[in-house]
Image (cartoon, rainbow, N blue to C red; front, side, top):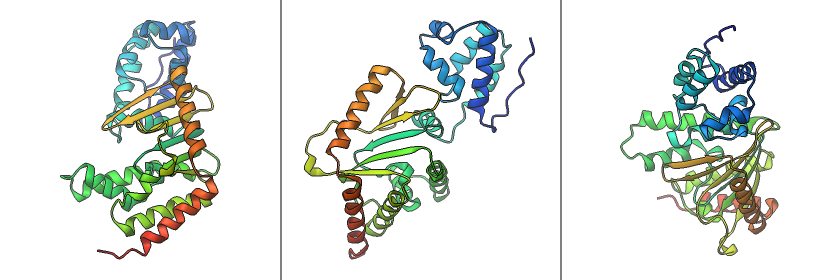
Length: 279
């Protein structure tokens, strides 16, 4: 058997590592289900590793090397992949987000990261990390803006955001920062880079009050659901869980303003912030 070459971690590493996993599994004559069973993961999870949708963790890499006879290949290259510019609880979700064909996102209190301006993001990072230096804040903002570049693609992903009115009312960074942030969101909606709905306070109680929700769909892998809290996050492909949160998002859509009405609300609030007296 030809020994696979070590991967260059800078060259789409998850996809390359997944491709090698598929080749090694097929050489061993194993199905995705058979390879995943001893790890207590589904065949679809193995498929997501092979497609590069999910990150390979070290315990899986060690098992693959032992089971598939790949002489430490996955262990060595998985170590290089473990480094991420994102927080541990969010790294795998951010990497999956970059290959998604559709993203549906609800946040109760903030403008989502993909839609933020540098000034808005910087204010959040200063709040989250009050002891960080200016250079550290700049690096965090740059990473977030790099991530947001994925919505510059003309067709993918299809991004549908339900934005709670609380995110519009909370003056992150003050009136000028909020005016700029809301104008940016409105511009993305007008350029059809995001389908946007505002969930008004008048909707009362709703299915998303427990926290944020992100559902991602892929061309060659099952959908993933990401649930995030304070420095915590959980990514799951469990069909029942994904189906339940698909229903949650549908209920939020039903309660939200239409995209046209939502755009008018956001532009009106941007105008109001712009004309507030500055401190």
